[in-house]
Length: 228
Image (cartoon, rainbow, N blue to C red; front, side, top):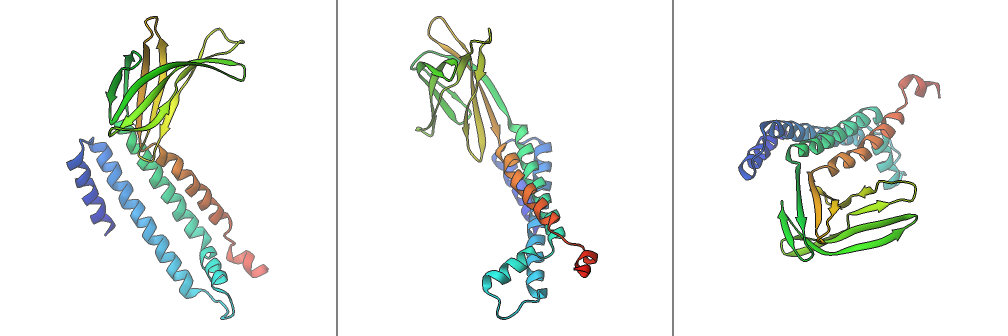
């Protein structure tokens, strides 16, 4: 079943978008591995519940805790491997990274990817000991404003060169990065835009690594259990 589902998803992806073969192969293997790991986790939980020695007087909560904490070494390894699968999905997104640069005057719009960028106004403000000079952008998707981003150049008293502060719009599907390359004499702004698909799956994998390590460290070898 996992193999069939993985192949179907690979075919569907190729029909919907032009995907490099490396991404298709990596994505298919990742989905296949992830489904296998989930099935193994479900199987492990079912086996634990059947083999668990509990008192009839134990509450449902106590029984559930005992079932979840049993077989920690195996489950910890599976959870960590599930994190690796999510990490691989995030890596797949690197095949679809997009980058562009363009210049806008106040009130002008520019389309890139699935987004429309509208330069509304320039902004100057102070944060801590830095003077920030930037532009306010409306980010539009499907004729709806989804965010306002303000990429800036930050000027610090201790530095002769300004620092570029990137504005970010995050979603599970992709991250949108906008940086201000320059503010020009005619009032226009030159922007650099990056679209990084699936990058948040990399961050999503971190809790699985942590949870898997906790499960693994909770495992107590039989030799130690017999001594206690």
